[in-house]
Image (cartoon, rainbow, N blue to C red; front, side, top):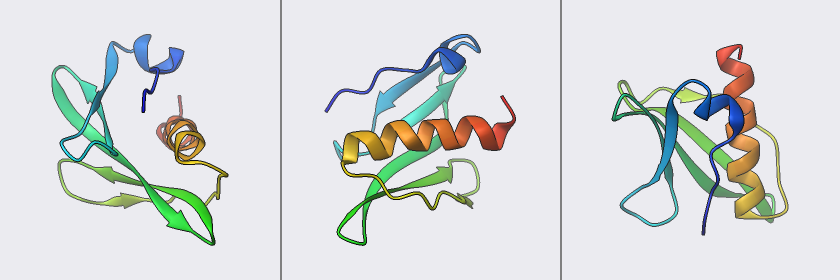
Amino acid sequence: MTLTPPAWLTLRHGSLKPSYDGRSWAVVFDDEPQYLLTPIPTMGKHGVRVLQSINGKQLPCNTVYPSEQEALTGGLEELRQLLGW
């Protein structure tokens, strides 16, 4: 699966890197992973878990998406909103 970094992330010199498990993606700033996005099964569809890498705190993301790809893209948008960007 490929995931293109959204404009708001690249404007802040961030990037996306695939995680070791091949399903999760790390949101990276200054070569340090800050958030980990993982698609999860939810109500027969897909949700996304967003964790802060530094402390393992899970951020609230409760939207259900039709596919894993859309869940990851939606999770990035939810992260943007949570960050106030």
